[in-house]
Image 1 (cartoon, rainbow, N blue to C red):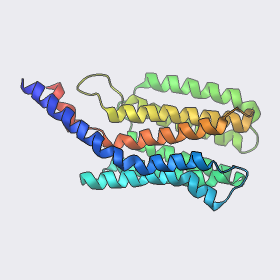
Image 2: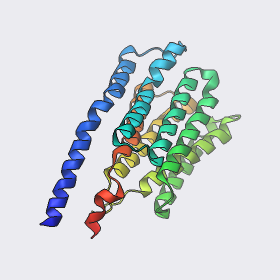
Image 3: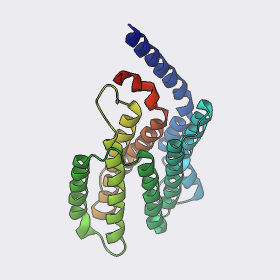
Image 4: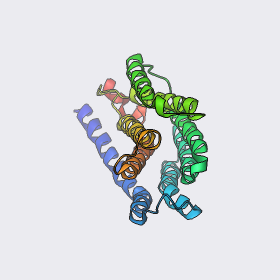
Length: 245
């Protein structure tokens, strides 16, 4: 009975966390709607265009700060996620101007490094590493013939960075009841969606134009960043360690 009562208590705690989180996400949701409603042509690069594009990510930065302040703990994990969002916003701004596409790749590469540092390297899970590595090598080999100049090493490096980030996010997921964490699942799903978004972007930019590519890229990108940012609200180890007893 004690276990059932503890389980109920933590379920209630989780529901309260969810209810408190939704209002903090409203600025992000409004910013995303604003981006798709305005739908500023990419052929018209401007600082206004850059602001509208990076505002959803800035809203997620605000979410991380507000949530961390609310719980009274700006954890090392949340700080790394926050820095990843900062670099992502810088990447968004850079990509508005075609001449700064390479700079945008560097900024997003730094974002993936921050996310990887947040996810850590335990447990290692080499099986997931092999799967992600094979997928990355296959994808790169398929678009290699379309690349030229500095994009040959840059796309290879970027593929390794986002692949590593996804590997580390997926490695944290466990289905065991005493280790299961929605935070880990959120980050893992976010990393996979991020790969899909960047994969579509790479094909559309380097290989051939895709129908509705911008809609697909931006919707999956914003969704991925939201899921990764939401991973800061997950239960801590102390919250579910009782299950292993």
